[in-house]
Length: 327
Image 1 (cartoon, rainbow, N blue to C red):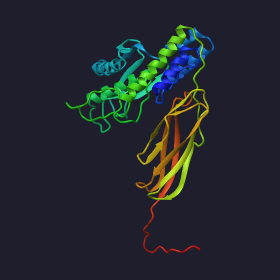
Image 2 (cartoon, rainbow, N blue to C red):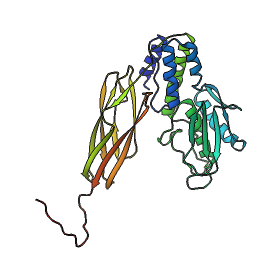
Image 3 (cartoon, one colour):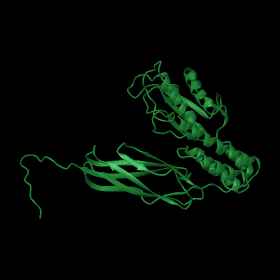
Image 4 (tube, rainbow, N blue to C red):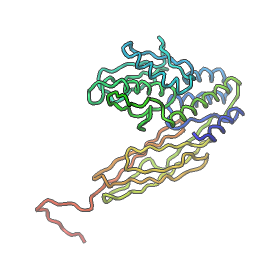
């Protein structure tokens, strides 16, 4: 979230006007709490709004971990306590928000489920190759569970604390596990938004719910059959039919995709995203995806499908095949 946008939203809340919106890649649970608190405030249901806001974790947050891995989870908890400057403190409790299990089998990263008011986190103790996971990788996976509790959704971005875990053996030169600067900025925006809602509840201030509403003019893109090496160009129009700026963050599933978009779309405005799919390294049917992360609480992540059939310019035919020219 840009500083200007964040400030304008906070001032709006203070003035009893419009609520805060959350950055892209925020967890679905926190999006739901945010929009529900704003709805209750708009209806002057201040007690209900305060009760709902307590579902947005902050302050002392409980967790529970097996004794054999208590030190691993404690180290992970300290990462976020420092990142929030003590605003969020994860402590061991018998009735926790985050319950840890450690899987004695290879699993694809930490498994996170937020259900019935609790996060179930399953941390692998084996790497994908079946070898024992390093302590650092287990701390990293546990830290992702705590980041998830604070509102950060897991990401595919490498070198991010919420991103893919490196399962290499522990080494003396391993960098310290800390949130990336983008994650710190994201977390700061979430804390500001929660604080704004807390002030509105305390002062019994009505507000209009912030409702960015994203619309795409296409759900999929088909480039048809092209010669291998072609850079297939697509265009996608993204519109904001809501009452606050829409925030965009595009994520491609392949280095062969280039997609550029401006980070914000004003209410009532639209933007044409230019997408290029390079087929140089691919032959045959090619199916790729572009993830569109936004601050639309109804659907924070949209998946855009792209399909192309890449055919080489020259093909060698088996001996004995008769070719017939077509007029």
